[in-house]
Structure formats: structure tokens, C-alpha cells
Image 1 (tube, rainbow, N blue to C red):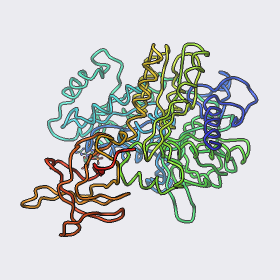
Image 2: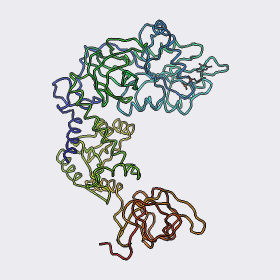
Image 3: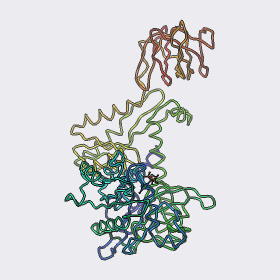
Image 4: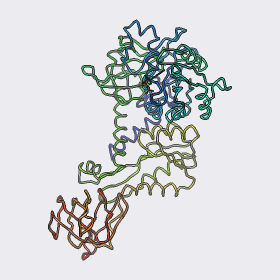
Length: 562
Ligand code: GDP
């Protein structure tokens, strides 16, 4: 109970940005949208904001030339030329546009990384360059890239590539794009484009110009004079250096010596290295740098923040680690294969393991939220192996917000709204993050649904009509034996299985068979009894459809269940 309460309280503290883990100002305002748990963000004053470089991601179908285009763009950059050719030292690079301004490219092309980051609430990209090969046209991943960019609200600049190839008709691509509501300027739309060849370099200047034009429209600004904040683009372990993370600074300036929290890791910045592999003392907004000094590997998409001191950084990291462990544990249990169960069951054995279903509860008024939480936390179902309970990580009055979704996402929780709904953007965020939101207007419906969900984790109680439960076994494999038919190779998990037992077979938590044991064999011999720990073969009367991982319950028909 102690540690459970502790996590819960901490989660609530985190969710509401309570002072415990507040870093930065003494401001009492609630935590802002998109800010990190445990870190209250200071609002930047408009007069502190100055122009920053655009951050660009290249997306598109496989083989349409994303990598070639990135390489070609890097080659046009004088700076990287001076530094001795293309140094792809880190997962991001900076390229000078024809007008001299810098553009930061995130080198993780493909929308997997992109959507991963999105789902974790990290929006790293200002502009997406959508590469479409002129000879191939719009393909599946072109479409999913368009969808990803659109749902993230990031403008697209289209690069029609491979224009050096003979008989390329760019207007075909342009018309195809119309179907996906990517309307280029020449069709009266707002999407900028360039016809390019990554191979010959033709059109690259135009492409960069279009990117700059698009960025001007976005009017990108940041305050460089504050503690740095940003996103981890990638991270790896490097021999002799420890964890090395590529970080994109989004606000403020990151300096050597700063203490940072990145996801659930923290550390003091020992070294910063720019995209050409050169050591630097600091990195401002829109600059990607390699950071050495973290005590462990953060994940791509984790946000990082500079904190005032080490103890705060450590505190925040520890809480996040705890939340992660908790989320992992519930995911592990949710799959409930026998191996997972065994892993869990090998823990302290005197008490049944507990599966906790985490909830975020929102209601129209505070009073009903509280009443609902106490009803929810009283719910419990159990079988012989597992107790299932709920835990409310956060509750309150008002609409379901994206912060609720983020907390649910990190803790693998379900969001429940009682007379409380989520606005469209929150729904979209939830879908991206794979978070389930359920809305109710009747308390009993809500409680019944949660109970039904809890029951999916437990096995149905023993069937007294079959007699007394004397043992259980897992089906390891099945095979066919001439005269007998299908036989299950089983391992008896506990108790005993006897010849003549009544049998119930469960698949997951569903009963798939009730009947009688037809044959019980140890190696080749018919036997009377098999004890826990031993393997055996079983055949069932009138049932051949057993599968590996099914659970066999043996009942003694001659003994009453009580
Ligand atoms: P990605 O999978 O989108 O990163 O595509 P790549 O950059 O790996 O390119 C796929 C293939 O297309 C490679 O064989 C490239 O050499 C070729 N390619 C890329 N850009 C061009 C181009 O502009 N013209 C021609 N002719 N081939 C290209």
C-alpha cells in the first residue's frame, strides 16, 4: 500500500505540476499545455522572442530519394564543406540556405520516428519536405507522410525528385497530390514545391528558397535567454563517453555545465558537439547538438529541460522512471501469456500479485469526481492467481485535456469522462498516443464497464459442477497420434491431474471446453496421476481443438467442490 500511494501521490503531483517537482520559477500558475511533468514552464514575453531557424524533416516513400536529398542538401552547404566534407556526426544537420540563414534538418527520415515523437507530444518539426519521385508518383508512404504532417499541423513543401530521369512528367505528381488535399500554388493552393534532382543537384536552391519562404510565413521565434528546453532526437551508448544524445534545442540556450533532465535520465552536460563534429560551448534555439554527460539513455522524442540543480534533476528523473516501470508492468501483465505470468508470479509468493488498472477520471463537477474515484477504488476482482484493482492517477472537474491524455499515455492509463468530454484536438492526440477515452453520462454504466475490463484479467472461478479443482496444467504443444487423435503435451503447474478427472480448458480467460479426460500418459505409458512439475500427454473426450498456452483445469468428480 505504501509504495502504491507514493506513486499515486507523485503522479498526481506530476499531473498537476505541484511544487514538489517544480523546477524554475516560484510562479503558482498551473502547468501549461505541452510542458513537462514536474517542470513548470515560464512564459516568454513577446519582447524576448527573436527569429529562429526552421527545423525541417524529410519524409516520403521508400526509395524516392530522402537520403540522397539530405546528402545533396548538405553538400550545397559551404560550412560543412569547410569542415572537411559531409560529417554526419549526429542525427541532425544544419545547412545554410542561399540567403545565408541556417536550416536544421532532422536526419531521421521516415514517419515512424516522426509519429513516435508526435505521439509523445514532441513536435520537433516546423516544415516537412515531402519527397515524391517524379517517375513513381504518390505511393503509400507518401500518403501516410501527408497524413502525419497534416495531423501534426506541419506545413509541407513538396520536392518532386529524380527530374534528371527521362520522360518525367511532374504535373502527374502534382495532380495526384490534389487527391490528398495537397494543393500546390499553381492550382491555387498554398503548398510550395520545387522540381529537383538529388543526383545532379538541380533545383536544390529553389527547394531551399521555398523552405525559407514557408518558414517566414510561420514567423518562427524563440527566446534564447532562458534555461534550455528541447527534444531528444536520438540517443546511443558510445564507448568511453557513455550515453550520447542528439538534442534539438527549442527554447533558451544549452551550455556546457548545465544540469539537464532528459526523459527519465539526467546529468550534467560535459560536452556539446555540433553537427559538424566540432565541440561548442553552447547551442541556442533550433540548433541540434550532441550532448555528453547523461547518466543513461533517454528515448527519441523525450523532452529535455535544464534544471537549477542536480537534486531536482535527479528527483524528476526518478519519478519518471517509477512511472515508466509502472506502465511497463501493467503492459506486461496485460498480455498475460503464461511466460509473463510466471515472471510476475516468481515474486513474493505469500500474497497474490496485483494488476492495477490506472485511470484518469474527469467529471463535470468536483463532488461527483470524488465520489466516482472512491467507488472506482473500491472495485476489486480476483482469481486464484491475481487481484485486479484500479488506481486513479488523476481526477478533477472539467473537460478532458491533452494533459490528461499525456499522463494516461505515459502511465498506460484509461481516461474516463463522466459528463465530461474531450475536444477534437484532444481526441486526435489520444488516438496518436493510443490512449483510450471513454465518456459516460450514467455512473453505473461507467462502473460496469470498468468492472468488465477488470474481469478480462482474471479467469472465471472454478466450475463447482465439475467437482473439486485438484490441479492445473498448461498446454505446451499438440500433436496427432493415430488412433487417439489429437493429444496435448502439457506441464502440470500445480496440484495433480488424475485419470478420469473432469476437465475444463481455458484459453486466456475464456472457457473453450468442459468434459472428461480421455487419456493421461507419461511418456508412452497410461498413468493414474501426474504431479505438479511433470510433463504428460492428455487427450480429451470429444475435443481436439486445444492449442499451446491453453490452461487445463482438472476436477475430481467424486469430491464436492467445498
Ligand atoms: P530513400 O529510401 O527515400 O532514402 O531513397 P534513397 O536516397 O536511398 O534513394 C533511392 C534510390 O534512388 C537510390 O538508388 C538513389 O541513387 C536514387 N536516387 C535518389 N535521388 C535520385 C535522383 O534525383 N535521380 C536519380 N536518377 N536517382 C535518384
